[in-house]
Length: 158
Image 1 (cartoon, rainbow, N blue to C red):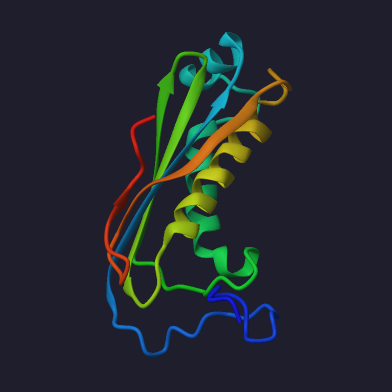
Image 2 (image 1 turned 180 degrees about the vertical axis):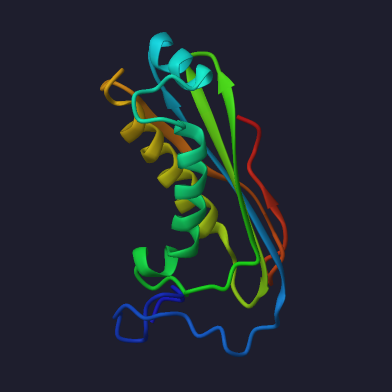
């Protein structure tokens, strides 16, 4: 019909058949940020947020979410991830989350990396909302992907 991978010849949604694809090493890196007040940022930095270890909890939430991406995103394949990491960096009035997901498989891990980042940022919001309800989550995007038939890709510099 139209060459879109998630539509059949009648235009109905379908899961892509990856059965015939070769297994290759796949890596995806995603990033996003949460902006907040100086008070919230300092409480998180000092470990003084009312709900405890914000970044430790957000890291675990991001990793757990990456492992469940196939349950959250329609038509996304459930994957046996080999590694997921979530790292944080303090920036001017914000925290940046960066997630890396990898496996050897037949389909990419871009969605897993982006779900990890999104969930980590939402967890930061949940754990610090008592200090700042006006936090803003944004800039969630794929930074890089490696492997697969389409090859490597890097986002242009922002």
